[in-house]
Length: 285
Image (cartoon, rainbow, N blue to C red; front, side, top):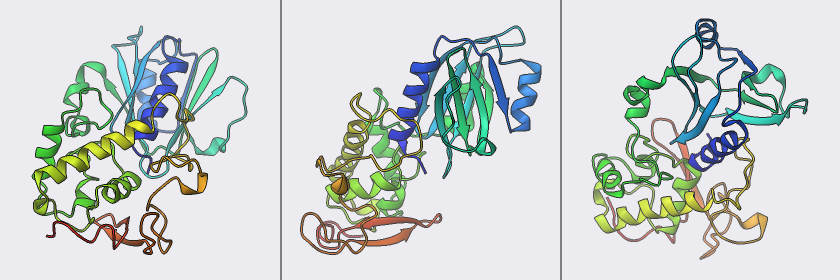
């Protein structure tokens, strides 16, 4: 599943290409999107802005002859991605996988394999159940660490490795950052949130914010396909040494040499990676 940094870069690149541009083409594989387009056509509207909230991409359209301002909300789930192409450029994925196509005079934005998409009236966005339940966004300039800590504390019975993926507690972190953050903070992913001190829990949240922010700077990749191997948490120049523990089961820890372990966590059985030595000590459940 794409994580918060990937969605942030996707929204930023879409915004740079589309903001202020008039829509000349709209196609969708989802019948409910087409019904909205029939009643209030997208063609002729302008893209006002594109932004990410947690793992949601929000594309704002101006009001048109057929209705009020609209927002297209998409969620990538496990395999969805937004691509953008110049008009006439070949797509990198088969057209059969395209679920939404939005064209302007210069650009074509394509959502591939996106299962979750809907139009929301701009005035109703603040009441949208999924968005209203999101915790503080790790990449938001208005991030509230105290609220994030309070939300995580409410999940005290959960292992920290599972709690960090609960988007209603804190939004934006996914499986890669979860494992990397806990390694850097020397916290075992199986330790329950309730067993962690306020100091440790705050350090985890701040480290998550630091790592995500480092991967969305203007010098980081602006490509808008689903993450394909360029995320970096080690600050090492070697492309083969980008991550501390994620995806490295059985390989030596970059700090102590102990083989990296992995296990599935939570109801979704997401795989967590950690170093049994570096993350063995400290607070226990």
